[in-house]
Length: 356
Image (cartoon, rainbow, N blue to C red; front, top):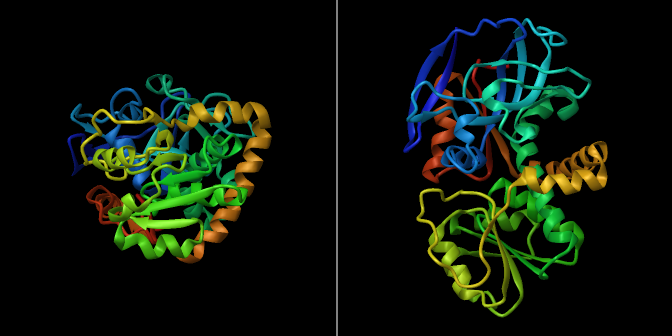
């Protein structure tokens, strides 16, 4: 007997635990979810449960008013009737907020397999692929860091490719600068040495963001108007706060591009008609295609892994990992992110099945 957490789509602090039978059918395997990260990225998945991104369709809830929040991390095959997938095999991938997941593995190769469950086929391929755990984290001790940063740093790595390889301006402004994706983006951009990277954050997170050393300048939100308005700049918005976006668009007369990446401040109202460039949604799977084509799949994975290893070495001394166990642990990890009171100096790891 397993369980899943079903969260109300219109009240993300409202969770219920539903039990489910998980015996695999012919061609199926059941994975026990060992450790997954819970970050602001997962709040974004919950907010964008409908069109155009449909994250709420990945792991359908029994109640149409609820969703099962997707999470990234590691799991072990607990039972299998699928060729090439054995009990005890471990995989990295996209999992539900649940104790287990029933999979329909396609052809299994050295790089893993794709889940062929019918309802998942409209999704971008990255969300359906399950990769052997050791290709992502060499040891169990590495798994919390991989779970916390692999998907977020993948977005950061791609943002760096887009923003840094052909910069539209010499100044890049990142909102919600304490978020893990913004930190990864700033670290990548800093390596180029030719761009000014400005971080905007709350007063409470100012010290942490400055301590990273990833930014050329860090300012609190109440000092946005001190930014020189005429300097050509690109805005990368991780906050999703419409009022904040509007302030920046009105103040930055030299703004040449505006990208929306996340929804850290998901409950804030959307921006109305804005002066300057139209904000464009940055969708990492679409941005990955030309980079993978240029580097090749193996080259892309190697470059991403090398960059992420450097970033984790830089950020690990500034962060601590907090572990939350069992069904009740999901809310302890997820709810502070929804409420906007999570400590950016922590990384939440959820262990649905207890300590692993």
